[in-house]
Length: 296
Image 1 (cartoon, one colour):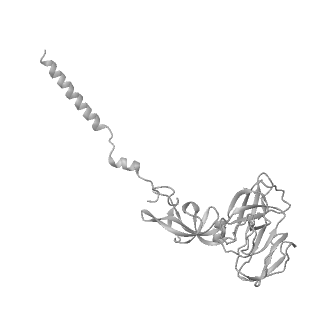
Image 2 (cartoon, helix red, strand yellow; image 1 turned 90 degrees about the vertical axis):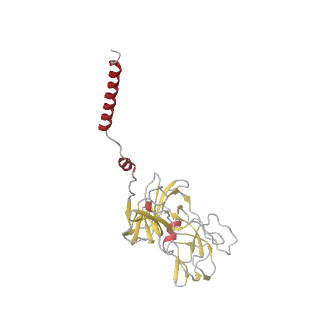
Image 3 (cartoon, rainbow, N blue to C red; image 1 turned 120 degrees about the vertical axis):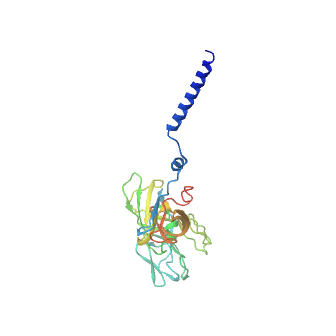
């Protein structure tokens, strides 16, 4: 009886070991390949460089203000001759003077506060400062002005919060007075210093005088330049940079390479590619350095 008990115990152990082995063999196993597939990096989404039209337009949510005195500058280098006196009240469209064979006209009604002396002028030299008797709102147009022709006309529309609109701007002009180097006065709100050093370049949308607006109200302003009908464009989300130059991640086989590009104007959704890419190139839909590892 005592000899049989150890044998039964050994038999039970062998049986249990066999069943465990059978259960292990029947259970699904996790192979290295399945682990790799579950953690594999998804390929980055791409967009194609294509040709299309674009209308450059910066927009801004800003405040209503009493329109500051603004300046009219030379459209090009040439001899300036004034036909208007300081203190005169002028109407929109009046000829104020000439630069070479080009006329300088008043964009709105207003009072001439300063007049430059007749002289051989460089481009963008301030000729007249005008006080407009109405309200306005300012827009940061640094990127727009850096990517369009300086003599390109601009238009705009604005919407005052909780008011009627939208309404066309009476005119789009410089924000503040560009002070001539010979002037001894410091003009508040000037976008250009006496040494010609520019910072942020802003423009103001002058409100028509029949629009009811008060300083301090909120407004949204959209400025519009001449449409570009045929250009290489990309979504702005695919480009790192907005002013003059930037970078994209161009697909090169199964990988991406960072490419420097020269940038043109933007409408806030798309941006013009002037150099660095060709039509049909595929680039990452996410700009470089925004999502680590997406452009590897």
